[in-house]
Length: 366
Ligand SMILES: *Cc1c(COP(=O)(O)O)cnc(C)c1O
Image 1 (cartoon, protein in one colour):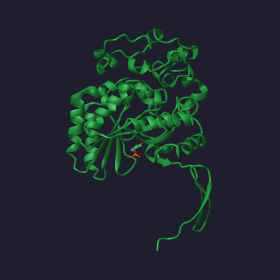
Image 2 (tube, protein in one colour; image 1 turned 45 degrees about the vertical axis):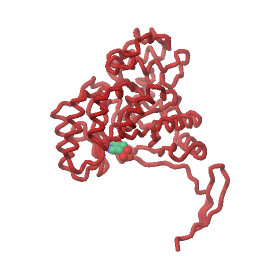
Image 3 (cartoon, protein in one colour; image 1 turned 180 degrees about the vertical axis):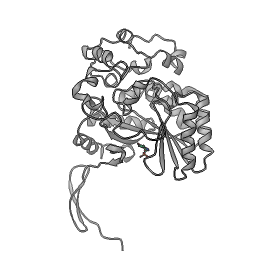
Image 4 (cartoon, rainbow, N blue to C red; image 1 turned 90 degrees about the horizontal axis):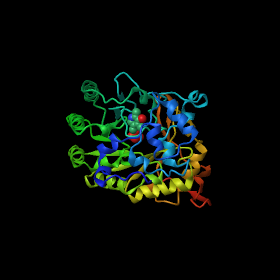
């Protein structure tokens, strides 16, 4: 894109990227000829589902292509607020909001902490779209302490998932505080960050102090969110590499999105690209029924077709678990294409990766 004649040292500066986020029609029109649907979308989503796009993420858009996959994820469209979309889904379909603000304790061994409503980019398909309207606010120390107290009191919690908003948008000192307090709790074994910064503003990971903090509180894992091969760039690769060198594994959660990645070949290219940068594809989520985002949903048949296509074309390492998150907070469930064509007792007929029916009698081990 022509626009960014910005010196390298600024382009590589996370704070510059955040300070220069594009939030208005006028700014955006300097770079892209907006469609009527987008202009109307930006106007009508104001206050409800606002827009913000880092210059870096914007630079990945092909301005000539109205269906560019980055564009669809970042630029509001009027459909988000139209009746046909608004009448489906719920703001909090997965019942994340509970007694303690910011804390969701769904599975016995894991809790989810949401520590801020701020995000580098407000993804149009966000599962927490309901929080956009709250403005950009990090949780206070008191709110954080309340969550930490809960975790301290619940010895069954071994795994803490810190999300947002964008959790790594918090300043280093606040992150250090949360991590050191969590590490004082003996039963907390694993800490994970759900962060999209490797995709939206990878420059955050060029901060050696942040990397030091993460490394000091090991074991820490990163769950990130690449949705399209175009998001795999030199800079995102550099960010991932910095994390891996500090002993922080990076796993990916893709969301199946209509028009963005609901194509077997695109998904294969994404998974191959992720393996190339040593990111493990963990989940492929079916898009949740979130109010204001249901226009991104496709069918479960499409998801299964994609999973079938991947098998045999990429290493098992590159195949994510396709899953739906059940409504009402009932948890995630994996969905697999069916490879058992017939079964009678020990006699199975399987479908091989080439589509061949193969009989296999599997006896009980002697
Ligand atoms: C998804 C989720 C988790 C983590 O689940 P994993 O399968 O371990 O990644 C934890 N808590 C909540 C509320 C979740 O939605």
